[in-house]
Image (cartoon, rainbow, N blue to C red; front, side, top):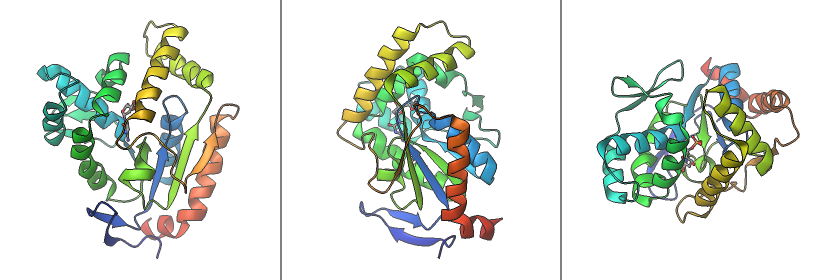
Length: 244
Ligand code: DC
């Protein structure tokens, strides 16, 4: 039954919570994932779990501890002991420090993409992500949520957009935050990151076969959000009303 919590086991043999009302949103950088995920979570009264922030926090903690982004085992140690916490406002905390801004620099974007390619890091963060999502009523945003982290999610969305549109959105986002970068550099950074995220051997960025593909290149994000909220209500309606 939708909304019921049923302990089960996924294909990797790890324990998992099936049937929880979760929405998986995957896709490349700049596709509008964060905006869409945040808006859907707000309208449904769901918690937002930004898994990219977790990889970014590992990169930040590693750079501060002097652990190289090439040191898979060292990074996995950091990931296993990561004192990360998300508060109700969506801020990301490492211990008692709000790192919401510090993890959003272009350096940490590349760092997160690099550290996330290590299988030991992904493995270390898998259970953490599942534990955070197990509370249910959450929108989980990332690259491998529908394929690996929560393959049982009742609603999976894969958001994409053309490279040019994604680079332009990313660039505007960086400018709005006061960063001084040009569009060409942003596009180059995005291509590099896409290439690494798509071609890594473990849990690459990929559309789950049962995910709904939404190309936001020529769509207003507002109309995408409205449509996806309707879809979520149709798909998770019983879960939403049961839990409210
Ligand atoms: O969504 P983001 O740009 O904040 O993610 C930063 C990097 O983290 C991204 O380039 C790849 C990695 N990532 C991942 O490998 N798996 C996820 N579920 C989320 C992010």
